[in-house]
Image 1: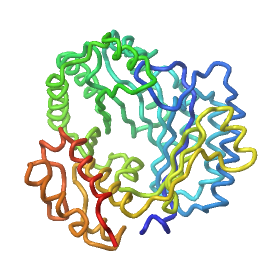
Image 2: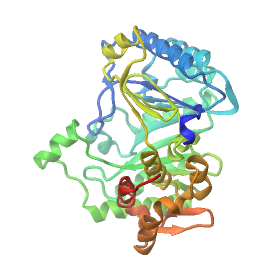
Image 3: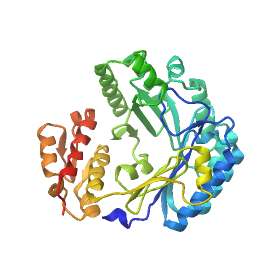
Image 4: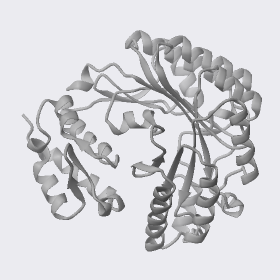
Length: 390
């Protein structure tokens, strides 16, 4: 299996601090006030050092810094952090994509300049909506003025590759409200947009409200209507939908996220970070202080699991079909040394007969109906665990 010998070309780094906790967020993040930020960055350096000793990196093609909100770091902290990333993962491809998540309102010009000087060349802003009342309802601390100011500062600092995240299916959101947000977002003419539906996750304020019946979500058909409207508007504006939730101008697709969707290996560092290296997945210890303490004596691992071949094949299908181009027979054969249809032929035929998958010249992709019912399609491939793969 290719992943057992593959050296990752992608690096994910987690900065778990936030100015506040949004009502829908179940990510591993902690409110910044009183947190030992420099101790955390020192711990992250210890993990980087041990990681590259354990599995020395080759040429790195993509780096992604997520959170939390990485841009809550001060310019000085940002400079220290990025210099260390370059020290341990500095063999960069000439066309490296180095992305960082940012929240509007946490990115002044000085900080953005520190990011640019440190090698960051792509920013993903968590905007979520251009409706201020809706932003307040979901617990965001920024408003639309902050969005425009942050984008202006990013351009002044020399950034051209920028993306914004938007959400649909939010409480009291209508198609008209979504359209007003799309109009403002598209007027920015950014090269990339990510647009996600709300998922009500456990251990969030929204989950508590949902359980009490106090979360006024759109009806399912209205949410589907929003998604159809989003796809139509983005396509008309010249953006290719290359993944279920992601739209880009040609050449601006997220190369880092594509590593996940193509089931490639990646380093994962930081509190609660996930990684996939040499056929083994790991999850790091989540709490800030427990993570810091764990790095003093070894790698801060919470759990590791070797990925069996059947599971890797299932993963290949489930993440690969998120891409609108679909999965390719040649990629499957390269990773697993056997034809795609020899493993999943029955499942594929069933889904094609239901009109949820369609055959392409190179493999299979979601049909228009399948895009709307993606989770139903992906679940079908979990039945592969019943297969006897010799």
